[in-house]
Length: 220
Image (cartoon, rainbow, N blue to C red; front, side, top):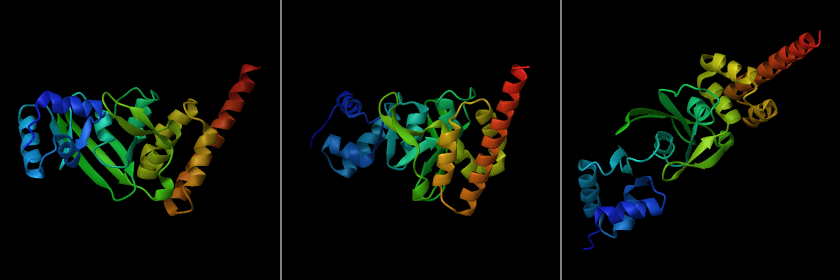
């Protein structure tokens, strides 16, 4: 049986940029059976060297909150208000984090040294899984939506409940309206997609008119 010291194990995780890792990844590093890995990870959790994010998923305490939220569900990206906060578009950090993935909706409550984090995972169709980039967290990497896709997703997930937020962001020129329109068109022709497209066209038209009026008044 191979016995790996804690510091060596954590060092390997950091070397591999695995701030958030799965049980099977830990087993590969440890080179031991699943039963031994479970016991090893359980002991590290009790000692506070790692913590359990979800079933079979663990994280190092140094991870950022968005890094954890964006990695706790495989093949997902951080979006909505959390993404707008990440890009500096809004100043207030949201109480929960929206994450998009291809699949079903799911709500997770993650507890760690930072407190409690609510992660809302929204299932989206494959054609809507775009508009994100891979970025670096404190240790590893995660996917985050760009500003325009975060706006589109807010409308897609919450409809009119987030209209005031979207209007404020668009009115203050924090997003590229051309990209916003392009993304809305890429959603397809479903009921929700049509609603988002109509909202976006309305925002763009209203703000273009307001901008022209402002420029005219400046010239008086």
